Length: 294
Image 1 (cartoon, rainbow, N blue to C red):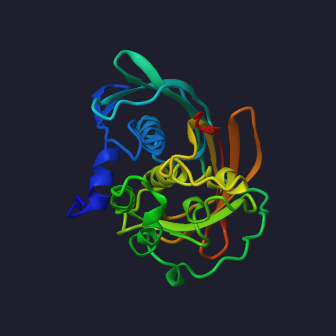
Image 2 (tube, rainbow, N blue to C red):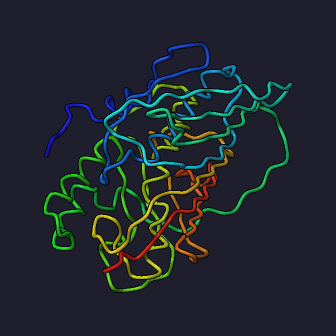
């Protein structure tokens, strides 16, 4: 396994875009478990690009995005920002990610100055203490026999070196052939402290949010996922609403469920809570989820 001396620093470098013109940025790319760019990377980089054109006193409160084409991990990605609106309270940006002359991703993001208002939230669901749950390095080798490729476990562990992600219950590849309630919980935080930059924490949560959101779709049908090879698919769209301040280097509970799957698509929706019970983020994603043809 190719372990980086500082995986979190590598991830932060990945999210630190190069500005090549006033509203044009370039990001590095790298391969994921599948031969395309990880969707969470593109979404996070696009939000970084949008955020760098917005005054620092306006925090991101929502994003809506579409994955248009598979990204090439061997080529950089160029992000062009369109300054749609700068209002008294809200700022709107549109970002297009381009590779090889074609758009691969489109994002609209809205930012807002802080203001007081009405307050209520859905209560945090029950979940065990994350410190009592196994790390990826402890948990994944237990399921090595589920993967036809013996290198998958090492690649999964490597992909999670920068982020400590812990499943509350067995992941989809842990219960292949056993349909379960379409619900999944994971705790996550970065493996190291982050700077006190709200945009960085929002972008880091955006990156992680694409890792497990469609797990609940797979659980409902007893499927193990892309690493097992009993489904194929990709993210179609991704939306997030950022309700309250949070830190991505402190434990966050990702409570996920799937209300529907049909037409070769599966829908995942989730809420992300801080450890002290504050609802920080709402996430919704739809993806292509198909059973491979024999």
